Length: 613
Picture 1 (cartoon, rainbow, N blue to C red):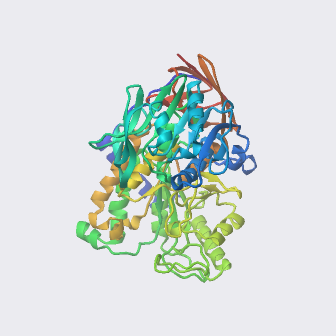
Picture 2 (cartoon, rainbow, N blue to C red):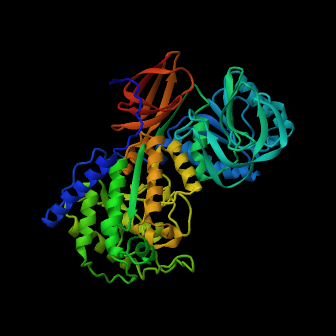
Picture 3 (tube, rainbow, N blue to C red):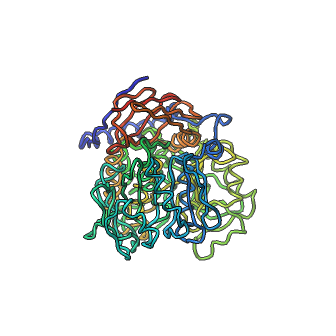
């Protein structure tokens, strides 16, 4: 199928008509609820793959031919720290690599077998004459990336002019925020503040032949990401000095600059989770609800919070995934009691379903699936379960309750309470409950957090980490959200209804301010990535299954690039950076401009041809 390049129109608000539509829909659903009508699940366009057809990412990457040589130095702390991130970056981008630790291994004499070289060293002295070998290879047509902030020394001085540098100092500049060129990456064209910035950038001045894509957003204007042609090849330099998970997407974007056409698979999906929802009336301090609205906790959620959340979803085309909790009791002996306040569950649950959303599991109560060998100390206010059998009984009760409340609905997503899941709890889910196809926990580390990557586990469960949370999107979360738009083209967010009852989560600000901040984030997301699909939790897992299996082979001529997609099922998404030429026609898919020469490819066949001029 041939498709012309599409331009995405800016997201537009529908104003008062949207709000009116929300209330009309709420009224219709309320009528249905009180008439005894239940929700019948509609067939989803994007679903899980058959278990026997899933190719895991671990299996897919084993088939990759090494096209990139990666140089590290295990004696340098920054190099070791960066490799932790780059190992996953290359895996997710489906880049085959050969790894050389220059601390005890030699750099290959012949680099001709490689398309790219990535240097993960700040101090280049261990490379010695190999610094010149790499630059000579680049001059002949190779592409090399220095991903760590370089330390000025004899060996760096040998090549700094080749990197596009006309002058440099021995000091490092403060990086408190980064301004990204609007044509470089998704969400660019503005500055993003950095939490706990420090002096991490080498102070340099670049020649006119260098193309700068990011710089420190202060009076110094120190360049942080740039490329420089050298002979028939190219250097790319990352100079921002942050080597943690929240910055992966910027390294991925930088790597895509190296070759004539940079291509890597992405997920393309956005999910907003509501944890503890549906729920019984939550515990907590209703001081600020009483202060602002003069009403009870229960009435606030029914009459104010949920209509507002519903309106946000309608305005921004979001389909919530709600994960239910049956009660807030803290008994962990396996003795369960069926929740009798069912009207709230059915009301809120069916509202989500009618809105196009989805329901999943959170907990019989809010006690994480951990046994007595877990000691929360003073960190978390939880109890542990008395036995494996007690955890099993609690999960069974939750699932039976969910089936009773929503008999026509399939639930497959599990979210651990407080994102805590022990090894025993993970084993329980994977071995006894085949209906659970997804675990959605944390992308970043935290107290007792079950930390995930976007992948399919060996037991077939999709690991689907949530990246950011709450209504107060701080600088770190905003940077992480931007990074993941460019790493996986994905957004995963969660919030708890009882954020409004906890000062640490912004309760004192009041719901109006929190609502506005959440709306600001949704607006930013729509404007930064209008091609991003709004999905439910299970739909995103289906996308992860397809993304994880995908491999890419490319063949470039003067007029066309041919992409062959390995393990292609029915649809795939990839980021394509056209560093050579402008695309004019696509066969086997469609291109949507994401930023500058960066495009989102929607592939409909395993072979895609992109003509350019």
